[in-house]
Image 1 (tube, rainbow, N blue to C red):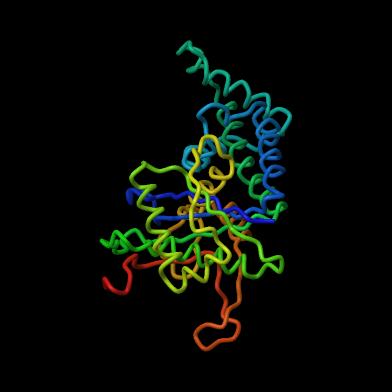
Image 2 (cartoon, rainbow, N blue to C red):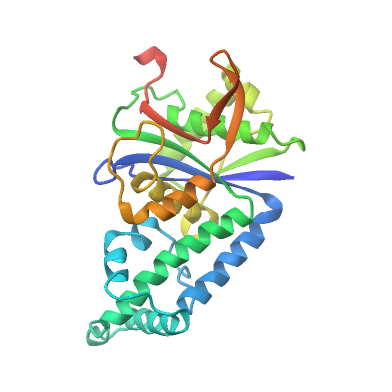
Length: 296
């Protein structure tokens, strides 16, 4: 028995997003395929078709952008049987080759699609809860100092692995954790592999944590890997909607219910830290400075 940690990020360009988020979802190997199948079935139940076929993905910035909520609130809630018909029509028109057909989308169809997208994400998070998925995140302030050290594993990654390690350490079955990343540009992948090796094999904390986490990660294409897309949803909702600890940036109010669902997926570990026997360590860490002590 083992656990995967699928990792993706949001707001790394430091432009519009209020926080830079490195997020992961952990799922037990025996639960993974059932989770994926249920999400694929949900796509058909909500949209009348698979919306992630080909190169399409479950991206937070596409499903949950402000326009989605604006469209969803144009009209009263539409009953699911009627909504699915309207959504299917809207999506088919959107894929049409004829520009006139694409422009023929009605207000009610756009409303139905907006409501469907929000309902879809909410049900995804509920399915994740039912399959005992846990969410992890390193949340970085947009003005946080970045490190110039190339050999050090960045602090947001170290915090994420620390929380994942605590989660695995609490399991009586002593499982191993496997880290899976969305594939980056190749030179960045090599750099991250080298940094993880330095951390897990050459630091005291890293060596200890390698007893539960395989130090060498896997890289996959996000458009082919449903669980990476789930991590993207968690990262996006966390950046724009979740507010914990000392996060001061304003949140998008329309994301509140989804943010609450994401928070329900967090893991709470208890460890003897700061002279407390049961110090609470949540799986979401807020980071103000990415530099290691040696650089500050």
